[in-house]
Length: 253
Image 1: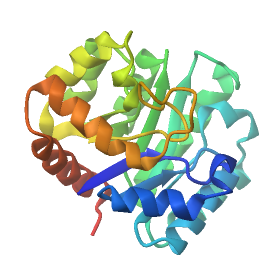
Image 2: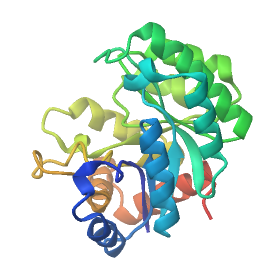
Image 3: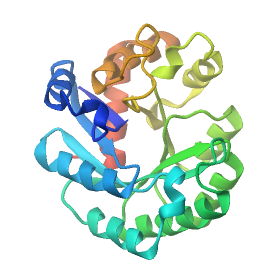
Image 4: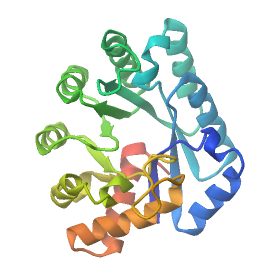
């Protein structure tokens, strides 16, 4: 059994064949999927998907790209969604100083407010951090104690160690298969097994050999095999460890 801990099946890329994509994932041994909201609409849609499909669970949040839209009303909307059945985390939330689709001065207060909301709701957080590692850690330290998963890990070893020292989990995507991603493979090799999770971030980051095509949760199987190859262990070891970690982190039944 495998778990895709981060994807966006609510996106329009799946409108034509969403049922088939979820069925294909289940047939490939992906027993559970965490669909992660990246906007207020996406969070509503994520909850709807969790209600429709037994294997899908929802995270609700607002991506830093959309921080300029954040308001007291949208915060309360996320709060109400977080109370819904099968909502297992607040996310994705965080800081992105790479693209700056929203100004940093808009991203920071939203991140702080949604971290506070996660603590209020006793839910873990799914963190997006890109070229914002120092400030991300500052906000997370200020929010402690909190359970956090740094998704689509792209930082350096210092950032990884800092996250691990705070008890956080980290997840890798299929971009570890890219020819120029040796830095990520080096991190995969040394990441502690009890803090490691798998994700596709679908529809993004299709594995090598599928680049340019839509990604989907079924590719978690390929990701598990690649991590096993990097670490020199069996695929079953990766399956067992990452599934157990995901069940614990998201408090899945």
